[in-house]
Length: 259
Ligand code: GLP
Image 1 (cartoon, rainbow, N blue to C red):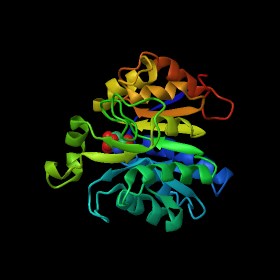
Image 2 (cartoon, rainbow, N blue to C red):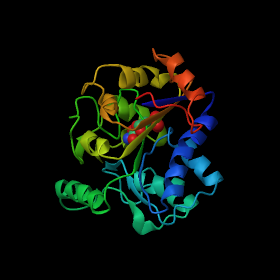
Image 3 (tube, helix red, strand yellow):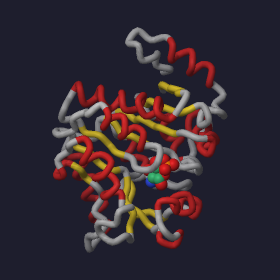
C-alpha cells in the first residue's frame, strides 16, 4: 500500500490526478472507476486544469442514488457529466452509471456487472471514504465480497450528504452501488480523503482489522492501492512517519511501495 500525505487539498487533488493521468497516458482507452463526493472534486479539477484527454476513456460510476427523478442535478449521473465528462471531453456513450430507472433494478445491477466485464474490468478505481468507513455506498455490514446491488443508505450518510440537497428529506434512502467484491476486482485502487472528519475512518480502513464494520478495510486485501490523504485525514494513522519516509525514497520518484 502506498500512502501519500499531502499538505493541502489542492496537492491532494494533484497527487491523485497524477495517478489517473499516468494510467491514461499509458493507455488512452483505459477504464476508470469514478467516485462522486467532495473528495473526488479536487482530483477532477486537477485533471481538467491539465486538460487530460478522456476522449477514449471508458468510465464506470461507483454508485447512484435510487429515487431521484431522471436528470436530477444531484444524481451521480448528472454530477459525473458536469465534473468529468464535459470538462475532460469524454464520449457520453463511454460513461456508465447504474441504471436506476429500469423496471427491474436487480437485473439492472447484474447488467452493470456485465458491462464492466465486457470491457475487461476496471484499470483504476477512484474511491472516497465515508466517515463511517463506507466505500461506494457499501455501508457498515456490507459483505466484503458483495456485488453491484440495491442497498440502503445509513442514516449518518444521509445526514452527511444532505449538504448537497435543498432539504434533508430529499436525500434518497436507497442506492445502487458496486459491491466491495466488485471494487476489489479493479486492477488498482486509488483512495482519497481529506479533513479531520475522515481521520478515524482512514485509520480503521488502513490499519484496523479487516471487517464488514468498516467496508473500506477491504482495501488491505488488494495488492495495488494508493491512498492520498491530507494531514488532518492522516492524523490517526499509526504508521504516519513510515508513510512519509516512503514518499521521499523511490527510484521512480513516486515513493516506494510499502508492500
Ligand atoms: C458518498 C459516496 C461515496 C463517497 C463518499 C465520501 O456518499 N457514495 O462514493 O466516496 O460518500 O463522500 P465525500 O467525499 O463527499 O466525503
